[in-house]
Image 1 (cartoon, rainbow, N blue to C red):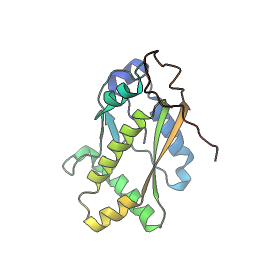
Image 2 (cartoon, one colour):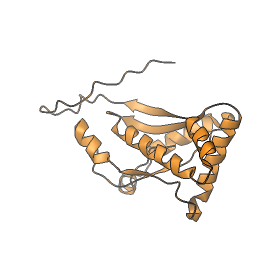
Image 3 (spheres, rainbow, N blue to C red):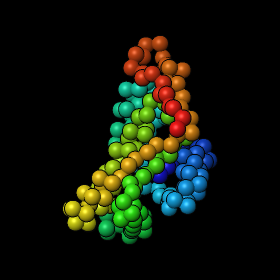
Image 4 (cartoon, rainbow, N blue to C red):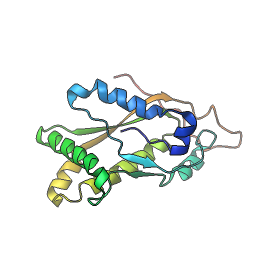
Length: 174
């Protein structure tokens, strides 16, 4: 699942980097049953790059929403069906359903946190038509992972009067 880019930003850049990365991730994991779905959409907001951490969190609040829609949403029934089918297959096989959120760059994780919130909301909506016990079992089996191409140092763009920036993330190789 690529982290969505607003239409204005995509038009100005000419390419959706997270979308291209998500395509590569899905292609490389195809033998494991991976599928690429655009489950999130995003409203236009000011660029995050020059904002301190707290302003980033406020800027992104409710900026993303699930695309899985309701049962009356005819164009999105195919997305809902693919998602529910993938969750059911993983549950029946006794393995977790792993959803990978893909983004090109992260600094403070504010965008990833908002995308994960919208994704969880979308999963709950997509599974609403199912009986409650089945819905709970499928949701308990979902793991959301994150794949990011680059992690930037939040202190590099820090303003002199900002004191709310987290230290850079550290990742261990697996």
